[in-house]
Image (tube, rainbow, N blue to C red; front, side, top):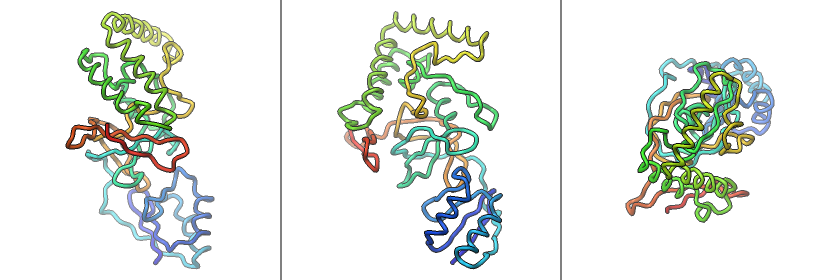
Length: 287
């Protein structure tokens, strides 16, 4: 059975499997305007005529389009169990996003601005077009805390991050060793009250300089703690999240993160997920 349903600016396309249809769809519809949600293809509705032509060429019919007005795309607050979060990549025309594995599929996308806002404490840009380069990460964002955090908060954050990124747990994960060094470096600076005061003073000087030189890159003035050439990397890769979500191309898009807690079992062990180089899927460990 072939059907097309239009709702919230998107087309939900149901067809029998046809290799040529999939090839034509991927060739003629930009990757940013289409997605496979595990059950059907979802395409932005301004491609309606093109989709109809592709179906006609491959199946010999032109199905009518059913318009549904019963589903809303308004953002909603959701509680999710995130098992793995990847790097941010160009997955939409406006800004990079990271794919998240939730409920057995890559059903969630996280806006880079939402991740940076949570971990760096900065507000996402108001404009939809992601034109400005976000500020680089600090010792605080590496540990996932704010500058107002107490020394006890620093200690707890370090333990949490050390569990998540310890190389012995993340064997084969190319990120783990480098991240573990950064976490230890951040802890060394922030756990020492005198070193922390010096670091805070340097950050304030940098920020004052940025006010007079808006084009100056903060990352060029302090140590960079992520390899941004490969996309922004969240400080954490899994956890229990409360976040604001909308829907795009059949997947949920996280626009704001309210909380991020560890996933623990009945023995008090913490879930850690990693993706070893060459593996087809991430793995889960309890530490």
